[in-house]
Length: 304
Image (cartoon, rainbow, N blue to C red; front, side):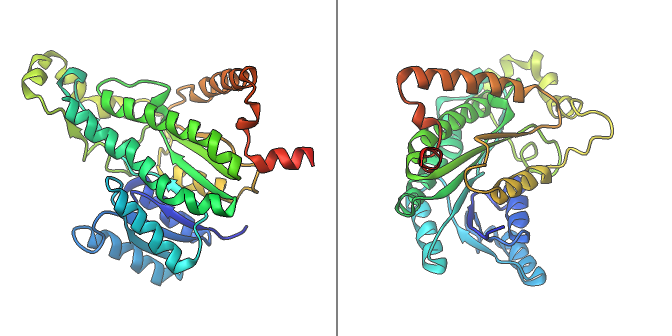
């Protein structure tokens, strides 16, 4: 397996943190990014750097606030200055909000979209010029099964993940023509091992929230209801997502999937993906754009 230089966004906690650790352990040079790593996140960054020293792995920390284009640009510039290249971007940064759809103000939704969708766009705009100039690279998007199956009381999150998925897929059509691969990893829900539920935001309009008081017991047991989706004796550990991302990076160029699902709830997301992908293939083929469905180097290899 060749070693890659990897940027992981949102690596302070949860899936991003687990992924940074797993990729470094697999022999990659990993830049675990987070906001304020040597300020409020000093304990988190120190833990990663101590791990790197203890395990003799190439795990580094870089500051990156996905809500700032300057921060994204500076992070990529720093990585290139240290290593001379960037091979893989793992788009993981995200936030969860729980509550009743009507009670979320437009500003609430705008904030979540800024983190979960525009954050990815900022990082892509920082990294893609380098990847395009090299004619290769890999974008890994940590999406969500909620873009297919729609759980209740998570309207802003579900909407943001659907937008994230659509932007990732349509971006893939274009950057693929420069030899850049894209894989969307779709985790199912996890109720332990991440800080999504404990750190979830709530709707800003308390008056409207109060009007939905009759439904509040459902919201309160949402995490428990989600945990009930797992079969008995199933270890729904988010490290499985990190392991899947590690597997994808180890695959030879040209054999990586456009999508992969890590879901312990058996929600049927894989079947829905198959139907959707077939519809997309047919649609683009009828438009005369079938070549956008595969990275350019694959077309060259198959016709050369």
